[in-house]
Image (cartoon, rainbow, N blue to C red; front, side):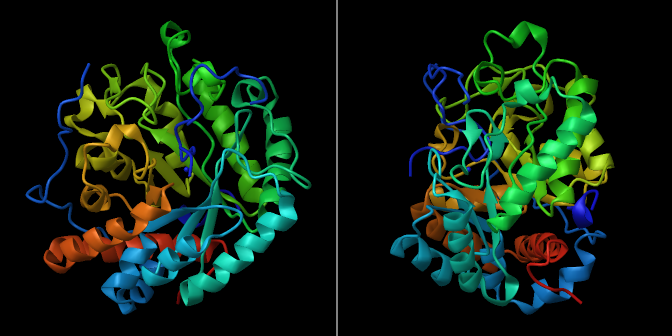
Length: 394
């Protein structure tokens, strides 16, 4: 199952850790308005890719509201609330992320949640995700879920051992109906940033400072997960290793190091070459790539992935509660992400899912190019679901 078919309310980890930097790492300038892509920015032309082709007809057959629903991943608790259920059904949402600082109900309780979500998903299925990196970032806990060591600890394992253990962790997720792991972290932390890097190094979330080593560990973890029937979303492209602040808490996080040919990108490029199912894009700024927009709103940054031949799903880091997007109107966040070429907008705050879906639907209804992008992205999400047996495409 190597790379399945081409393929996170308290502030929860969608990709960046919502664990404050002052939290012990045990087993686990005033902001000016954010410059982002606006409605006047051109929408990248849709691209008929190998991953989208099998599900293009199915995506096109959906109403615009249903297509938009495939592009929003909503945060839910293990005890699904009426408001969360309502958001899913009203806005046709097709993906959910299991939230909470930890979910300790064990496999049985999470499986029950997944079953309820699947019924709500209808014919297009429901993609259930979680942050299950290990260490501080292990959302699913309790009976049936082993304690996963942090990435810093995983880095000391041999490749075969890491793959085997990731497969066992993946089997637990699959038994619970969670088929997308928002992991592994592919961010390379240069040695000079180890003591100051808050989102990755200080929380033990990375595999190290050597791009080749990080790449090998990302591949080993991914291979094990996929062998268990769980897709992965490699994160946080183009990397949070050369920053100081954490986008969950800081209003503007800037990387002034990474370039389009930076060695820091190697683990991501290798993952794409290996047929990655999904890649998560960060909300930090990368001044040498696109100084005006956060990565997830940047056609340049997302386009770099596509230029590498990436045909899978581009997932956003949290667009609901992260401080990095606090100045962007909620109703515009998914619009800007999809305009930039993104596919699946993730919000940990269920109350924002509706406004995001409505905003995207209205914008697409008024813009044929954006509407075509919505259809393209819906096809990619459906293809990912189909690769996991959650829906079917001709």
